[in-house]
Amino acid sequence: MTLLLSALYALVLVCLGEAILRLVRAPGAGGRLSRGAMSLAVGAGALPILLFWVSLLGLRPTRPVTLGCVAVVGLFGLFREDRRLVRPTHERFDAFVLLCALPALGFVAFVSIGVPLYEWDALAIWGLKAKVVYFEPVRQAAYFHDASKIYSHPDYPLGLPFLTAGLYGLLGGVDEIWGKAMLPCLFFAFVFVLYQGLRECVDRRVALVLACATAYLPTVIRWAGAGTADAVLTLYIAGSLYYWMRWFRRPESSEWLLAAFFSAFGLFTKTEGLATALAIGLAAALAAPRGRRRVAIYYGGVVALISTPWVLFQQTLPPSFEQYASHLTAQDILAHLDRVGPIVSAFAMESIRFSQWGGFWMLPVIGLVIGFGALRTSAARFLWIAWALHLSAYFTAYLVTPHPLEGLLNATLSRLCLHLVPAGALLAAVHFNDFLARLPNRNES
Image (cartoon, rainbow, N blue to C red; front, side, top):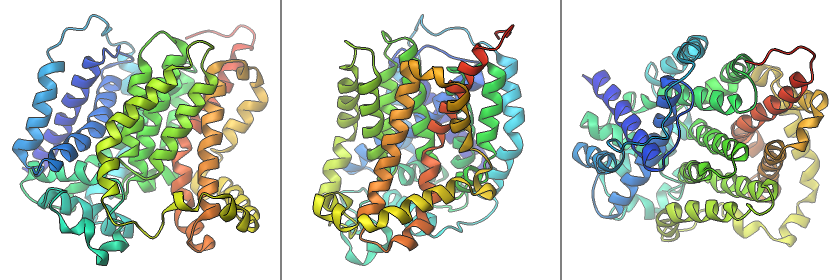
């Protein structure tokens, strides 16, 4: 029964995501598996926000509340006829993508629901918050104002906890093992969302190779089933970049709206989601065709609108001991310039850790060398700017952190680099496509 209810919850997320995609008139892309994965990703990002809003009203994420949130959105979207929805294409190739990713998916599933929570952050931060928001509405929960719980960062975003609490609601109680049942589903969504993003740049076969090379990275697999929020944030980053890539191919389209949705999902998932949203928005503004740069303002407005309830609630919480924003002063930056060397060295050593990344971080570099001409395109410039701004934000955070630098680097660097993976894969694809396009007698697929 637990397995069936977990499967039902995944189906609920797909239905919610499909309703939202229909509401915003998102055109279809790829086969049914690709569309289902995108719907799952959208639903997994939207439902926690909806549950948080109703929690602010005093309602717990029980089974009626969870299904009610989905039903309200579904009434507007699922039965809406949209002529822009195109007939699914490349069904067989989508199945081949799934077949290639199946071993990695099986391992993530085993780590997720085959073993208890083993990561400290998964247990003490995300797992604890899931129980809190399941048992009490956020406005009534004493946890958020309890100084003794500071170790669990009460001010961290609640996306993953509410996603887990929604599953608890369908199960009828807390089950820490099955609370991670959505993690393999989100890994499945990540593979297909990334694959669709790569398809915006290269043909199906090259996109398949790059998607599988990314999915099988040891760091990706490790964190996908660990119960922390980093892999979930990576999925939302991939979704935002994917829809911006679609917009750069068709600037008159409204894909920027879905990119904003995914950035808002990321902001509600991890604190780093704010840096990601800012980096992507600024990159879009700088790389957009002249006369269409105001779309970045619309993007920022949608992200702000969706995120405002969370930001306002967060301001009512006692300040944490981190408070990175308060350290972003010229005085603090100048006082820690001696950290520049160790930080650069740490990033460089991380990028060549073959046991964790293989040769992944060499792919964008090799692509840039052999496909330099891609820099003439707005999409390539957007990706490089977004990637550079994202990396710079993390670099600055390490520069001004109040924590001991060495310990923080050891504990967090691989997870932060995970957030940079979607841009790295897309950059490789953009430049490889430029190289392949210049080969003689190349057969287009």
